[in-house]
Structures are given as C-alpha cells and as structure tokens.
Length: 226
Image (cartoon, rainbow, N blue to C red; front, side):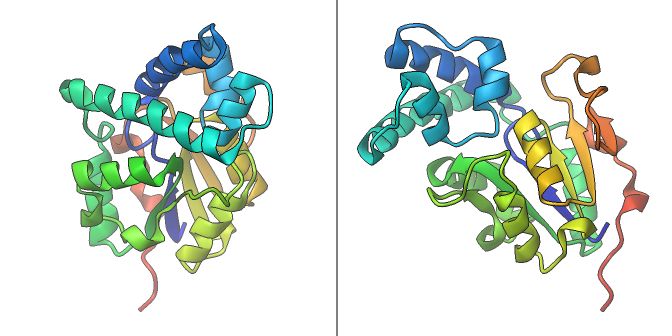
C-alpha cells in the first residue's frame, strides 16, 4: 500500500459512544423519542448531519434547519468530549503508528463525515497538524455525499495523488466500509472500537480487523520512490 486514509470518528478517535449519547439526547428534541442503538449503527455513523436530521424528522430539512440542528447537536457532543478528559485522546496505538507513517514518508490523510467545526476542534485538541497536511483532510462541506457513497474516499485518494487501489482505509462504520468498497480502495481494515468482536467477522472485503493500531502489519506499507 502506498497511502493511508483514516476515517476519524470511531477510528482514530474512539468517540462513538459520545456521538451516540449526544444524538440520543438531541433526537428526543427532534422527534420526541431517542434513537436506538440499531438506528445509530444503520442511519447515523458515517452519514452527514443532513442525512441524520432528515431521517429523524421524516422529511427534507431546509438548509436553515440543518445548520441550526447540526450546530446544536455538535455543541452537545464537543462538551461531552471535553468533560470526558480520561478518554479524550487518540485511539490505542494511534500516535505511535502515525509517527511511523510520518517518519517513513508514507502519504496519509483523513476522510471524515464530520463538519468543519468538529474537524477544527480535532486539529486543535489533538495537534493533528503534527502528522497530517490539514489542507488535504476531507470533511463534510455540504457538497460531498455521505457514506456509503464513495466520493469522500475518491477525493482523499486524489488529494494524496494516488489511485484508490493503492490506498488502505481504516474504518469502523458499515457505511464507511461500503463507501471504501465502492471507491475501489485496495485494502480495508476495520477498527473495532465499540462493536462486539464478531460484528465484523461476517463482512466481506475486509483485509483485517484491529482493536489497537499497534496490531497493524507495518510491512503492508511502502514509502514513495524519490
């Protein structure tokens, strides 16, 4: 593999429970009943806020509704991140793995359906510019279709000047895994940050499942030829 594309939420930062809790709290406001865990898995993780809001209210939201509801929900989420200081850190083994990739000049970027307010928050709080070219990070800008559409991974590969088949994607969400498949990504590794161990075992097309980035086989990666 010549390049790496990381999903972020639930992958580099294990915050799925925080998003779940924030959406459960906010979905009560939107529709009167909270999202279930199954709804979170199938309709939330990997999708845009617009998609989630549309699902919650049962109709096409206006742009003003999307902006208002998304900002309110993400504000709840970020407050939960800062309160949970013990877990407000990158995933197990991630910093060491990112150091390895950086030291070996292996191209890498992030492809996340988070919106800019959250991405800016992550860049600042996790010092992501230490490893990533911030300008190459792909995020939900209101124009990119949500996963499982392949667009976000196609853009990320292009930002790395690589063909999708030469990239490895790390993902935790079913929508993200399906998006990577649709984009023709060469290898997909599932990051099991919240699901039961057997959850990913029946998914076709995975090259591996990890619970810690120290488990990644580093011989998979080749540095670019200078």
